[in-house]
Length: 324
Image 1 (tube, one colour):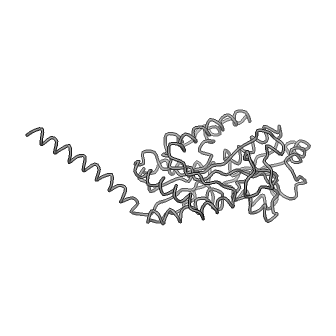
Image 2 (cartoon, rainbow, N blue to C red; image 1 turned 90 degrees about the vertical axis):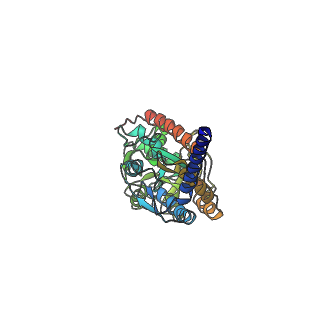
Image 3 (tube, one colour; image 1 turned 180 degrees about the horizontal axis):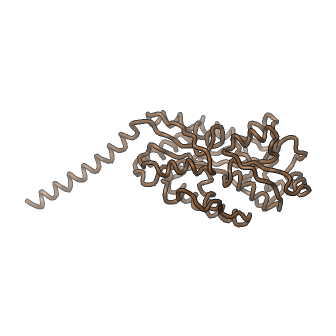
């Protein structure tokens, strides 16, 4: 009799656990979801978030709101998410700086490996080396020659100290043995604005923010940072083929949640994002901007972040950049 009662108790517990799991999946979300973008409006991360959020809102049945939190090399926005409740209602549209910041700053207010639950890498995109048209160079080799003839006189913009565009440019300067002055901004959008005004001469801009101004001839493209040319602009050579063999630096974006977010919520978000990234209109939009949708698994994305962290730590060491 005791065994039978025990068996009934175990069965009841299993049923309750299963019901709880189903309830969690079917009840999430029951209110709006916030997607934190750790950079200013109009930048590459913001553009990606605003392409994705309407689709995600439709699939989740709740509004997904973009919340721009720029500054401190994207660490302000990252910290907001890292310290938010792990309930799936605050997400981070992360960027390459998650892997770069540990090599740049002594005090990062979160640990990218410990404090976030990866959901999926959304997009991979190269940067594009652009100059203001007033600069008398029309190729990567001409830029290198000009910079060598004017050491320390050229300035370059970035989306902020420690961002991917910053380290991408530092890698370029290190390999080409050049000296330029770094001018950091709070995001790609204000950096591009000053580039267009001619206040800064050089930048490795995200493909999403740089190409529209290249097409309008307001900026001049010299090369892309990927290993191969991009389909959206096949006429632009890679930096590697133009002047620096072996040069490659790709910017990536991905969706993350606070650590300890329930696995069923992570699975739901991953499934919806994977479907969204493979929608024909989404793929066409990203391809037109030179970006490639990814949609890998949470485990694959986590491994990729670890690999990128090791890569950029090496780049920072070789460029002589010390954590501040």
